[in-house]
Image 1: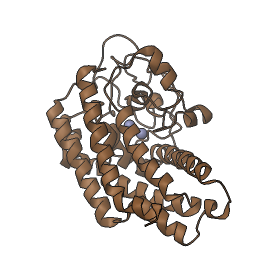
Image 2: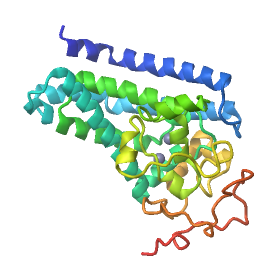
Image 3: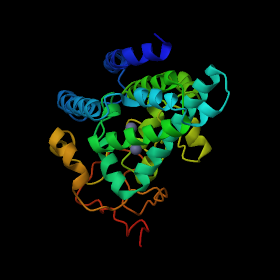
Length: 313
Ligand SMILES: [Zn+2]
Ligand SMILES: [Zn+2]
């Protein structure tokens, strides 16, 4: 049995093992050293966020039984992709493939914020009113299928070693759970860590209700892309404890924290943007408190439409 066949055979066990291992580890850390006080019942959020994860896992297995690792083996057999034409050493091909796939994930994340129809899908991830390890795995099934298709296309063009794809899948799921963790990390350690990996404090900025903050820090694994492409933002204006998480207008836990509401979310409301060009911040445009007490959306908060932020056609 070749190494590739061995990897293929144990792919599900390796991925599930890592998923539950990291989930339990992060859940324990969140209990021991929580960063923020959760505003919605943890039981409600966990039950519904994890129900969505199981639904997505079943759907992906049904539609793409061989998954990304299977696609990598398929591409390798046929000599597809960049790396099959290059004579790169194996270890270098693995490292470069993981980095390249991470860049694609970054670009895909920017894309789902920039295209209004895709933002509708991605809203499910952002609508969570709290931020913890289960937020990291909470995506609409259509976004999951779309991600899978983009991943297949990337693998076909890149021709990465099978090991690189498995490594990337495990790494992405582990770091997504880590950087959505509601965990406290000592400041000095966090500052060093965020040069190597996207930390919870770095990614939390991306879950801000503020447009300009939400359109920052798109990275999931490597923090370098945000620095390179100018989308890096160190901290939220209101501070990590006072910042408001989620999306404008969708703040009812009965809708955004329950499975039926999450599944329906892409199909409700008009598209008002959150597009990538809305990165400017205007104090007059109905923004949330810069400092001081945490504020919730109220009837007096002007609704943000394209008009107030210069999104005229
Ligand atoms: Zn996002
Ligand atoms: Zn996120």
